[in-house]
Amino acid sequence: MSTPSAPPAAAAGRAPRQRSRWTARDLSLIAVFAALTAAFSVLPGIPLGPGVPITLQTLAVMLTGIILGPTRGAAAVGLFLLAGLAGLPVFSGFRGGLGVLAGPSAGYLLAFLPAAFVVGLLARLVLRRTRRARFPLLFAAAMVTSFLVVHPLGITGLMVNAKLGFPAALAADMAFWPGDVLKNLLAAAVGVSVLTAFPRLAPKPR
Picture 1: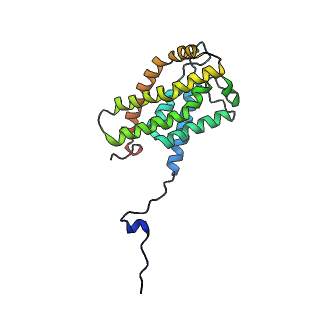
Picture 2 (picture 1 turned 30 degrees about the horizontal axis):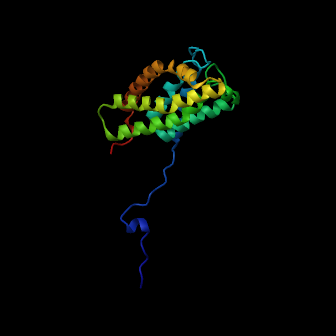
Picture 3 (picture 1 turned 90 degrees about the horizontal axis):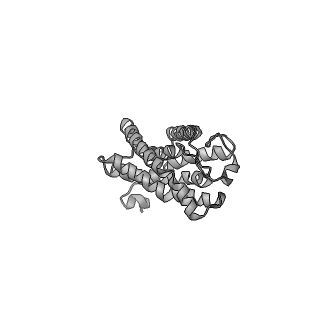
């Protein structure tokens, strides 16, 4: 009499891999941080020459990725962008609609979603591997994301929509660098504080 064969995962001594799903708590966090990003975006900005103001939008994006991680952070920022492109006035200057993609700030806006994912991914690597020096490492993660994702796409948007040459677009983008350093410092500090106060938001260390 033959016995039924064990499932491949059990035969290999491994538990079957379950599909991860977002809970109601995850969806609530995504909605809250999408609203937070919108609130930071509509605060008055400091106008600059090429028509892209200095705002707190990137602070919200970095903070969202640091606290929520790559997937939930990108979902929150994606929800914010979707609401704005659908016409809700959630972008800087109470703007909304697809027309913003023709403006000089389009590159920066389009950079927000991948930036949230990248900084969230880097933050999770930091949080899983160390309990010390989290502030400087999270600040470094935000700076790497700024200069590998946000600024290159922002410069591209200035070149395409504002018709600037690369030297002029780079010079215009450099005006945002000091502010980004300060905002990334604040995002890392607030991120550490929030994750310390609410440890369930932080990934389990390996």
